[in-house]
Image 1: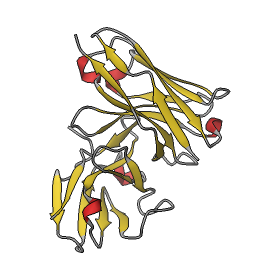
Image 2: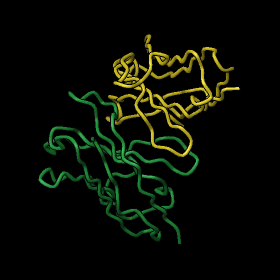
Image 3: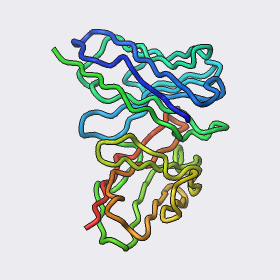
Length: 120
Length: 110
């Protein structure tokens, strides 16, 4: 079945780095736009970044521009999020999400999430 | 503060109908499709409605979506205790070049 499995979360000090991974299975990964969405503790959903199938289009929320980098390896069916210069406000659950077909801009499949905690 | 505005909470009795509103502007809801997500306590968000009013396979027809101008509405009929969850609207904002979500609405089934 269609599945997304995130990994790479953890506890990191402010200013530190983490690399999140999202392993996809059950569908043709290279045919879909992929995104990262996060949720701070007790808060709502916040879209972070999205990447087109061929890497030709990338968008980021302003608060992570210059610090986070999204990438993908279609041969490995894996999405990545490199997070540098982490701040306390980056703390939360990070979800990998698949965009609906034909650039629908909704998220029809979500991973279980990986927890990122930025704290000294 | 979210770009899309939702009421923080709504409540209704089992079996009744409830609506959740999502208000935006011309750069988002006014010119883009709207999606709705359900997040049951302690779980991952799930797509309920896409392209304003379409339901993914497996979503019961108790859930419906509509859009008018710069606002969208999620309707839920025949409320069940299992519908207690947080509900989020989401869309693309062409000015921000971002996906934007509403702040979420907590549904309580009394």
